[in-house]
Image (cartoon, rainbow, N blue to C red):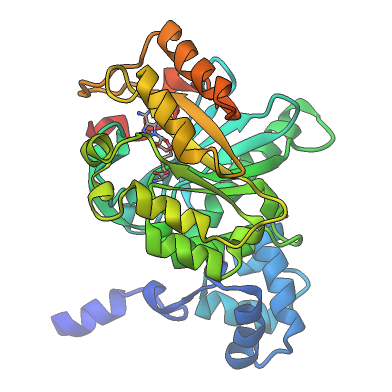
Length: 376
Ligand code: SAH
């Protein structure tokens, strides 16, 4: 037997397409699934709806589980489709109950997602849209990683499904009747969601479907550093109607914002506020301005006065986020007195301000700390 035929003989029997050619169905919209079952399986469109429930409601990881499909359809699915899930590399729980999930996606990409207990019940999940980040904000740990790549739709939605699996296992372990629910989603993890607009939009459609995770659109917020063309698109395509928009303003003068958020040199504060002014009025959602408080950088009385002048025309809410330190940064969190004084001045000027207390900072899960310690 020649060496070549020996190699051929040793190769395992081929079961369907190579992985890279299979359809990654967890990233398909409902309409695309309905069409795909027609062309790939010769099945009626309602099979696509059944598949949707398996993928997004049951979070199935193989065709074998899909018992309401015929054996032939399941075999065809196993050959043609990819049901890959993320793998959980680490799950850390903070003293305040916040959990950080470190997840591995396609091609070894590692990124993080955070589950934050709500004051009432259920959880808010903070999800990532990129591996690393395309921006270079000075105060953010993720920026130190650089940009690796955008997450695919399936990798965005599976962050939620992994968290649901975790809560399900916990309910089983404690004998609770129902698992705790994820009620709110915020795109405030790693990455700039509006730089990955298409996949984020698809993921929102999937996650808000009542047959999937069923998270109401009005409980989903996208946070952006201020990508003006994408904000305009967000308004034009109707997302602003239901989805919350949070803008990381973080400074009150262009000089300071240029320094700490270099994206400001492309779209400055006036241009950014113009884009927000032009959004179609939403009946449900107010815009949120995030403001990371950095000692001696953007926390003066004058900053508070300017912040009031800049945003009070909007039906808005200000989220003041005391800076969360991370290794290697020279930036500091202002003293509690300074933070109190800044916020009091904003409130006296008529703004609605909430101080976001750091959650999960003991496990590196607070705002701006997601950076995979292994690499830092
Ligand atoms: N790229 C998006 C979303 C990710 S950052 C954006 O810029 O909005 C989510 C929020 O965390 C932003 O408001 C950002 O300003 C804030 N943030 C980043 N690093 C931080 C840090 N070290 N401490 C406190 N907040 C931080």
